[in-house]
Image (tube, rainbow, N blue to C red; front, side, top):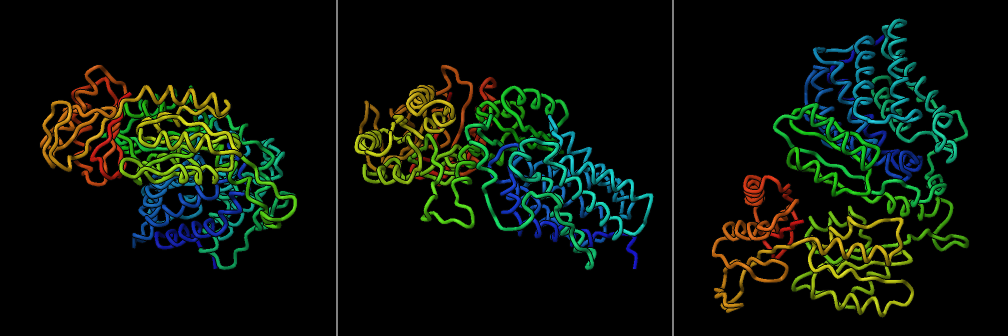
Length: 553
């Protein structure tokens, strides 16, 4: 029996099925990932994006096809991860735009929505490349228009459309030399077709997905050897940086200004404006510059920074399915430089992991790791050289002792005395430089950061002619108690004033486990109003002991 329309209930079922099918095959899609960067995460990122869309449609119970498509669009955009995930979110977004005003969708509406999805996705990508998910999506849209003149049966139309998609996917190695070199088809295109296979299977129980016709991997056993064709050092820009900019009203001017700026410091740029936020994805060697520019437009949320060189090295160091780590001939790839970082607080640890920390030792004030602890952490890092960031003046000596005792690796200590200094140091890392040069440059970058901390007194005392009572709030700048206050917020404002008295371009407020987010946001608003030339960011550090940690650069 012909199927001539899709309603909201069926579309919801199709989207969920598509997301689940990709989730089941995400590892294989990861193994195909060599463009734009061979970091092995395209399947994972697309899967997480599609599952975010699926979660939103599962909340609905409506026969309205546009309402379901709109919900999927919202979920995908907010859940988008990575370059491929953001592009997929734009395909969802355009698809919803194409169905606006529809309660049901037939072949004509489907064709219009697919072409609108391509238009939206191409608009979001600054430098589209042929042989990618965009090419596959565009060809699918063109085929949908063609079959809309030939049949009104959705089963027939969808099967013809996706069959053509596989034909184009098999041609992607001829369009993009890096794919041909690695012997794979485009990962993003494969991921898109996997989603569509799942969608059609949910609508047509007789549907049989096409198969790849080229010699590129068509079986679903996971082999990451394709990524070994590339050195992680060949990745032009090392940090995959993503975030939301929260704005009262997002607009085209802000979107265009961000695209222009980001094109000067990176590539793989996707900038998308929605009603009250802008989603940004960029590959860059200077995530801090991207964040500073973004802060000029609004508050940041959903920050994610990943070191793609380390991702690539980690993926390619995995043995293929037929070989185990203890088999003869297996030699895991080692990095040139790795990092051991001392930090505490879930928020800070997330930031350090995103910036490429290999091993994080939980520690800090009152929780000083031993030399043995640091040596054990260094031993876990598979790299020729290791840079240690102690992030506390009381840990620097133990770190240096560990460096002296280590015999099988070159170990350098950047004597960071606070977590903000450690963050600044990691942002200054230059992958093409050797560890010794990096240690010097990272130390110079750390010294440009002033650190403020607020904790409380555990007993009555007198320090530097300051009378301190138990329970008072101690406001510290670079290790020196500058202000004693009986009220947390009052002391915090006074400390920020002191740190910004001589100027500052960027101020970051990290609130701890015992501080309230609303109070931290109020401090951010205070700085923004009183120091309009200073960009301010508020983040959750979740650190113990210190209610707030301030960074001023």
